[in-house]
Structures are given as C-alpha cells and as structure tokens.
Length: 221
Length: 246
Image (tube, rainbow over all chains, first blue to last red):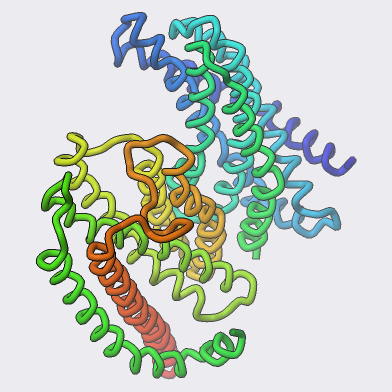
C-alpha cells in the first residue's frame, strides 16, 4: 500500500510543480462552457434544458485532454520501463497514477462545475445530482482514459487517436450521468441512474487497470 | 480445438487451406445470396402494415447480425493473439475489422433508408441505433490504432487490447431493445421460444444471413491470404537486399 501512496505522491508532486497543467484543464473547461451561450443564444429556457449535457460533455473533453501526460512523459524518459520492473504489481502503480490524475484534473473541474452550472441556469434541484454524477463518473473517465493513454504510447498522432479510441467508451457514462441530472431537474427518481454509474465505476476499477497494464507492457517491450 | 489452431499456425499450410476453401465459400455465397434475394424480393409476402418496404429488412437485419458477429470474431482473434500468441490471429483480426465496419455502415445506412418511410425520420437517438453507431466507431478506432505504429507488431498488440475492451458493447446492442423502451422493434428471431416472425419471411432472412456469413468468410480468407503473402514478399525483398549488399 505504501507503494501506491508513493506513486500518488510522486505524480502529485510532478503535477503541482507544473501547476499550470491543472489550471489549463480548468481553463479549457470554463472557456468551452462559456462558448455555448454564444453559440446557442442566451435564452434561459434553452440553456436550462441543455446545461446538464453541456457541462458533462465539456467535463469529458477536459478530462480527455489531460490524459496524455499520464504516461507520455514517463514513457519518453524511461521511468515507465523502470516502473514495470519494480516488484510491485503494476496494476497498483497504474491505479496510483490514475488517482493522482483524478486529483489534479477532476477535482478542479468539480470545483468549477457549480459556478458554471449557475451560469447555464441549471435548476437548483439538479446541483446536488450534478456533483454526485461528477464524483461517480470522473474516476471512471480517468480509468478508461488511462487505458487509452497507454494504448497510444509511441503511436503517430497519439493525441487525436486517443480521442477517437476512448470517446465511444465514454458514452455510457455520459448517458447515465446526464440522465441522472435531467431526472433530478424533473423531480423523477435518480437512484437508478446513480446506481448504474456506480456499477460502471466498480466494473472499471478492476478491469481498466488490467487492460492498462497489458498496454503498458507491450509499449515498453 | 487446439489441434486445429496448432495445425494451421503454419502460414504455408493455412495458405493451402485458404486457397482450397475460397472457391467453395464464394460459390456458397453466390448460391445463398442469389436464392435469398429471389425469395426476399419476389417470393415472400409484403407486410400488412409496412407494404413492400419491409423488404429492406432482408438486407438490414443480416448486416446487423454480421456487424456484431464480426466484432465477436475480432475480439476472439485478438484474445487468441494475446493469450496464445497464435501467429495468424493478428492477421485475422486485422482482416476482419474492415469487413465488420462495412457491415455496420451498411446496417446504419439501410436502417436509415428504412426509417424514413416507417418512422418519418432518417435517424433517432434510441438505444439500438446509438450502440450500433458506437460499434461502428469502435471498428474505426481499431483500424486507426492498427495503422498508427511504425512497428507493426506493436500495432497488432495495442489493437488487440482495444478490441477486447470494446467487446462489452456487443451484448449491450443485443439487449438494448429489451432494456430500454425504444423506437426500434424488439427481438423477433433470436429470443426464448419460437421466433415471432412468419416462416415465409424467416426463410429469406436466414438465407441472406447465412449468405452474408459465407461472404464474410470468403473475404476474410482472401484478406488473410493477402496478409500472409505480403509478409512473404517483404521477407523476400529483405533477403534480396541483404544478398545484394554482400
């Protein structure tokens, strides 16, 4: 377990040293959400109805943009290869990296989300559910994204390819998260949606590191 | 099972088998598709509600089945490549992907053409259409990843991992019409109990489905044969260069 925390601390320290990285992700999130009222028009009703979708799609894209620094820097300077040679199970190290990625990407996004929801006129009933769906959904996004990031190590145009690969896999999370927020706004029960989101997270938790480790091993060979 | 896979791990032996099988598969394809089209267009009843445009079903439904079966083939070949490191499994995965993608595209287009007269819209964001669209994107991602690496072996392995990870979508498509109340009609053929479809319509449907399957097999064998020969040509060229340098 200490090795898990060592990896988390290492990645956190690296990310915080380059503090601009997290800020850029939040900046992208805020700016892109701000684009939508310009594109759709400032009419409150329209923004109200689409706010949950806009917020979640943009959070998804922001999470995806920050994924390449998960493995790429370590891959290029050789420390990823050293990590594969440690006696610890590689899955633990991968989970540690994903945790650090979530802390430095998803937490700032979750902090910015309520303010942006206010700007998009999301109804009050939806706020708590929005935060809950972000809490349940963003770890899944980080886990699936880690698998994608490991697969494109060393590929040409890895950044764009990553988006092509993992966006189809992100879609179920998006569907249920937005479904939950819309249900909350309409006064319908949200428990089902949240349970399914939790179920997807619980399924991704063992399976995504498995695939990520397979991808990392074949990348460093 | 392992007898067959070990026996045909030798590319030359597989080439002989493929060369022998291809004409038979092609003949079966022509026979089945020919009779299927005849029954579909001429000898089967029109639907009481939909009229003649129900006949798009004979193209649409088999291509949906083949798109999913193609992805299952892809996932199975990828698993074989990763777990047993079967030398030809990677080639099967690489060859199956474009064929499956074409079937998925055909399914989406024919479904769209069917939807306009039936539902009044070219597209609807319901569960089955959306998951078939996602399947199409998964195929495209697989093909993109295969070709994204300078080292071909890395491409094969990365694409194999992606194929297995995306396999979770296939049961979702199958059961999506049961789990969600959707516009798309629920399962009539492959469900518990007898198929709910009239036997006169079932026959051309099954003929087309099996015909499509033999088509898939023919093209797959042709492509794998092409990949093996491609590798041989590359090896011969390398030997020539080496001999010329000495």
